[in-house]
Length: 318
Ligand code: AMP
Ligand code: MG
Image (cartoon, rainbow, N blue to C red):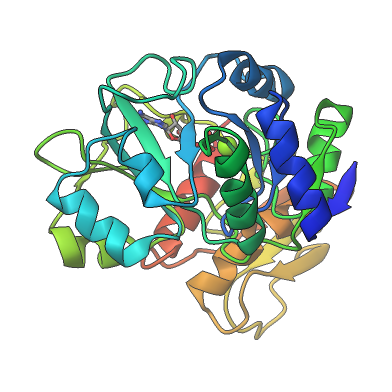
């Protein structure tokens, strides 16, 4: 059931979280499927609803950094990044606090926990209310079936999860449109586990260079699997023309007719922020058409283009 993200339904969502149920809610990145991070049975429902094959660690969300201070240990780098970018599309993987309340299933029993304060008014009010009546910590991956496209509207959630999620808070289209950037700060060298909605350049400006995870490294995050975020149709990347069987996903000013049975533009002005916001939405739309395949124009590998290219590569992997 999709319900408008108004006071009464946000209140109901917080109540459902407190009674161990799952709820889908909007964040500024993509829609999330949440459960009380301190309640193992509730978190298990997330894996079941998503058909997630393994108990991969989930991100713990809160409205208030104070709650996170007893979940994880903040070092100077984490303090700096949190002060600059929270609430916002940045997830920090930090060493677990000895008093952490999160259930083991939430972080897959790892010595670390990933945490984030999302920047969406509906999510923040829900998290605040849940902090008054429960743990205030919400474990939440994206609200879609495992390996499929991430949802950027309440309708996408309903299409992907159907009756598996009885309560979907509608907060309109998400404004960032790709998942959060994940930075691992558990060791001396900061590592980018997933490029995402916060440009790496902005993070590195504050804490210095971060290590990239090389292709072939053991995946420690599902977003690092070779195939992930995949549309149901084959994708061909860095295309300069599209065939009559293909849809063409464009980037930048549409000048000449470059083919394709139908065309959608990620950003006519060539803006990677706008393109990120449109990425999953356009792919969802193309998935619903009868074109055989999707051709995608090259996207510059700067700013949020890094996250877009990461998702496109994984989605195009057979
Ligand atoms: P999603 O499931 O789309 O919310 O993505 C969350 C990502 O964070 C997944 O790729 C997880 O594997 C990753 N992640 C969460 N917690 C940890 C952790 N403690 N260590 C490493 N990766 C994590
Ligand atoms: Mg996901």
